[in-house]
Image (cartoon, rainbow, N blue to C red; front, side, top):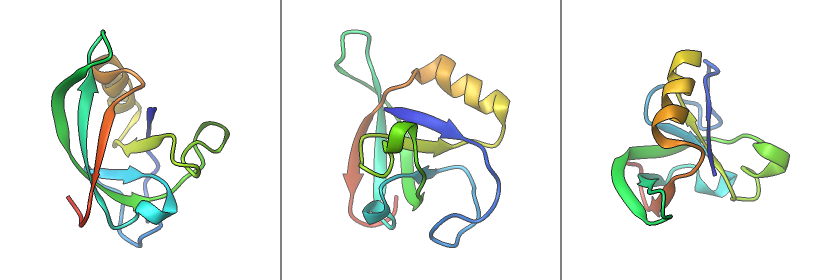
Length: 100
């Protein structure tokens, strides 16, 4: 599951929020991520982008902490709605060593 957040400030890693940041399980901080769309049939869709795990969070019922969801940082409420309209609530996530 993938949700969005738009809080401005310092992340768990100490960097300031910006495009390309993800919140995820604490053990993932410092790792990179590649995100892909999920097609209607559930198959792998188009490439979304490269991201970096720089933050943590709670998620829905602790889903970020247990590694079953991520949060994509976006700058404002409009960007949240654009993300949901474009990608919905789910993405395919590939975690890679090193930052994006």
